[in-house]
Image (cartoon, rainbow, N blue to C red):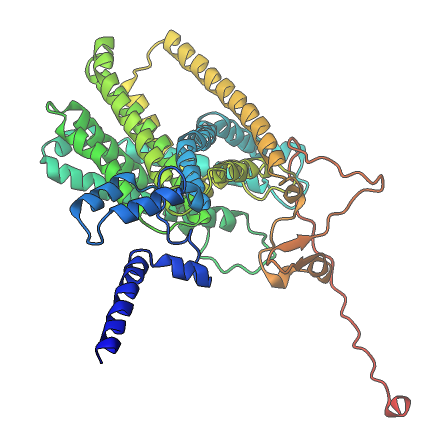
Amino acid sequence: MAEVSGAELSEEKEAEPELRRRLKRPWDELHRSGKVTLAAELPETLGFYDIRAVRREQREQPADPSLTRFICAELTRGYFLEHNEAKYTERRERVYTCMRIPKELEKLMLFGFFLCVDAFLYVFTLLPLRVLLALLRVVTLPCCGFSGSRLLQPAQVCDVLKGLILLLCFSMMHYVDYSMMYHLIRGQSVIKLYIIYNMLEVADRLFSSFGQDILDALYWTATEPKERKRDSIGVIPHFLMAVFYVFLHSILIMVQASTLNVAFNSHNKSLLTIMMSNNFVEIKGSVFKKFEKNNLFQMSNSDIKERFTSYVLLLIVCLRNMEQFSWNTDHLLVLLPDVFIVVVSEIAVDAIKHAFITKFNDIPADVYSEYRASLAFDLVSSRQKNAYTDYSDSVARRMGFIPLPLAVLLIRVLLSSVKVQGALAYTCVFLFYLGLVTLKVLNSIVLLGKSCLYVKRANMEDKLFEKPPAASASSRSPGKDQARSPTPSGESRVEKVVPAGGSQPPPSISTQPAPRAPLPPSTPRRPPRRRSSSSSS
């Protein structure tokens, strides 16, 4: 028994070093068995994998964890960013996109701003001339003889209606006292004025969205072919609705201008600061929402319209203040810093808002060039032979900018601020009008050239030859139904007729739109004959 116990003790003493060695370096057995590789258990350092150093460190360090080991591990541990290369590349591209957004946005804003300038100058320059030409046609028609089915062309009817609306609304605005409205607003508290200004902005958007529908309904009711069955209430009710709308919208913009004027003339500038902070509140209301490309396009158009309207309001404020101070240039230098602050805040808010919207919704910066091409396509298509709307109306539908109420208010402020007396004054007014006409023509030429370039870059030239959509399916002939068939993508396909020479003529931008030809009478198709039972058998 003594010999057996002595042998067992000797075996335990021999196995004890081997057990300690296995507990201290447990990965050797796993590495020999092939269950795990050595590299998978080694820690990652800032440099490279040093197997001998790691083994030496594990032999020297005690088995129990300590604070020193934890601090050393925190100081020497490393990581490699290339292990997730796609993620960090995407983050870098987002930063570059945010840096590109202000530049691309300002390109779109500048193009849209000059589109609004072109539509606004049209009311003061070419619209009176077109109205005079239409009235001259009506006066000289009995002498020249009446030929045709229309006394005036549809475009001329729309021009006459616009001129009448402007004339009536200006006559009604002449009885609105701007000074009394200014002092009424000035007597209110700052917080109340801030609430009023926010309500006016919301009301302006609602008026703009519904006002163009009222005007379009008037134009279509006045120019609708007489042979069709009419389901409208008549031209006169629509005309009265349009006059009432333009008058109310003009008063609304006048209240906005008066509130802005009170903010400029306040001593502590607190109201102006609150009104500018309202722009930054807009960032909170729009940045954290889900936006698609179409929604972002609508918001961009709304921003263009708001920026142009704010510039016209600033012009009205400067005119009213210069009139109160007898056109003293020293007071204009006092107003310029506040005007500069308002303009810079508008630009900064738009840049920040669009940058974060594109970041959160993964929208590339190139989308603004697509928006610019879409606006350019509207301009070019309005100059085509088959145009179905005026350019100013297309801008109003796209951006929500209706120039008539703003034009009425600006004419009202100009006539009350500037006194025209004497032949020299009327000569200056006439020269100023010629300058506006020159500016309008040059602006239209430059915009048309740029628009053609943008349309060509976007490969949208083929869409210029498409026919406008028909009013109803019942008025289509079988030939048109065959020519215009829906594609799988949901868009309509139009078969273009090419001349015999094989080349397609370029779109004309100078000729007048041709009237729509009457539809040919559709011949009833004969039903197919049924085969007799004898022939089928």
